[in-house]
Amino acid sequence: MSLSTQAKVLRVLQEREFERLGGTRTIKVDVRVIAATNRDLTDAIAEGEFREDLYYRLNVVTIHIPPLRERKEDIIPLAKHFIDQAAAEIKKDVRGIDPGAVRVLKRHTWPGNIRELKNAMERAVLLCEQPFVRQEDLHIVGAQNGSQEGAQSINLKLPPNGIDLEELEKLAILEALRINNWVQKDAAKFLGISSRVMNYKVAKYEIKNPRWSKNKLVS
Image (cartoon, rainbow, N blue to C red; front, side, top):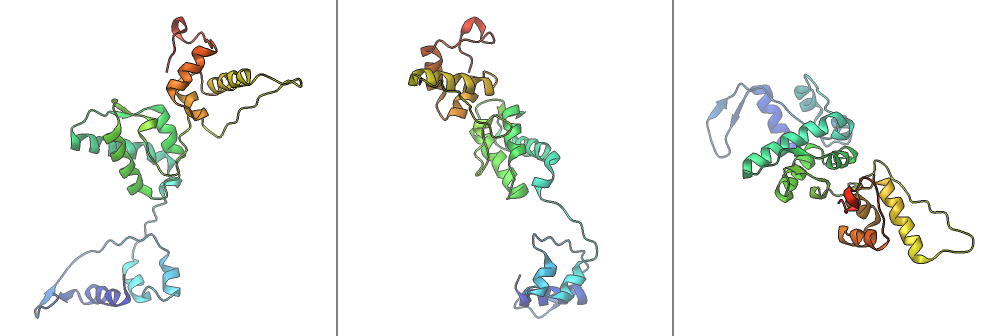
């Protein structure tokens, strides 16, 4: 808000009257103003960018709302609310968020706050093909989309006499599966390969796990 506009707002608040642009009649007003800012106005006053008298006129009761990154407990309820809104608007059956997507939403820092979250959920509803928003439906700039809770690395112990490259690849796939609870789709993302390539590698190296029914691949 420019300083000239601030002066006009101050006059309206003090005199409780204004004139329309180009008009000649004074209009009386009786309003209550709710103002919001994402800046520290005391700094703006010190820098000459905000009028001190307008600040004190507006600053009767102050409510500080912390950024979304400091209110982790609000992220999922808000996300579900925005999903319900978006789904109703486009008449699509989307009922909630799956656990993988929940982890991504909780880890993201949300620099754009509520607006960023709302846009992300609207986009996810448009893209999702299941009743629940999944991790792959989220396209959040700067988000960590891995299925693991924190950054993890694969530690492979190589024998001193060397190792066959294919054997090394098999060990890497086994370790990625272990880290991701033997969910092949998540292990594929962890390694940066497609689910199809992961299925091929699992079959090639005859990797099996009791959790896979009759050793059929579970993605």
